[in-house]
Image (cartoon, rainbow, N blue to C red):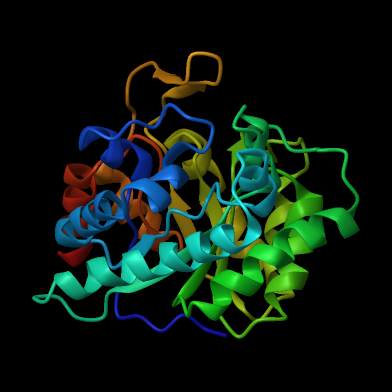
Length: 295
């Protein structure tokens, strides 16, 4: 399945930092996913801010929603199912509010297994689970999210080749275009596998329309765009974080931002077809990026 577009699609930035900027408390174990239960209006507002900044696609707040994580917090399966559906519905509501723009789209976030621990495991991978266990974990969420009719599946922040293979196989069972995006460390996945092997996974899956990198510093993403395009034969998706480092113990970002929208022209020439930001990238930066893409 090809990605039809007259120009690269602009993705949103970090949902959690936009919610925090609006005064939301994200200190609990459920992180931004809690607001799908407690303050859906705040989630709509955060999505709307990115649409108004120029994003063509926003990614749902489902990244950290799982039946296992919610059960540990005392939330039953029926409520978790409702929350997953709601994540797509709230993003769609935000799109409907931006009446001056057409063709706005919603990507359902499929975060990695490691996100359920809320301790940075998604930046390490190698969970010690079998592929059958990973398949069972991801299929439950995918069944619900796909039934809510997102435009895309954002299979994102994947640190591990084994988990990527599982998700690529699962995506083939659903009629929804997806992108497959890794968190990387230099020329390797966060679990230490060669990125060439990781990007090649997308070449064998028709429903994966793009592959690339997210939630990694721009310098690591910049170094591997050509490799992603060559190994997959598809457009590249890139949405770096601010370049700051997440401290799971203090639950804070450390260091200075290195995100620079001015790099977008070079990325497009090298094959990037979906471009945005991840953690700590804000609407003002997405607005600057969108302006550069438009011109």
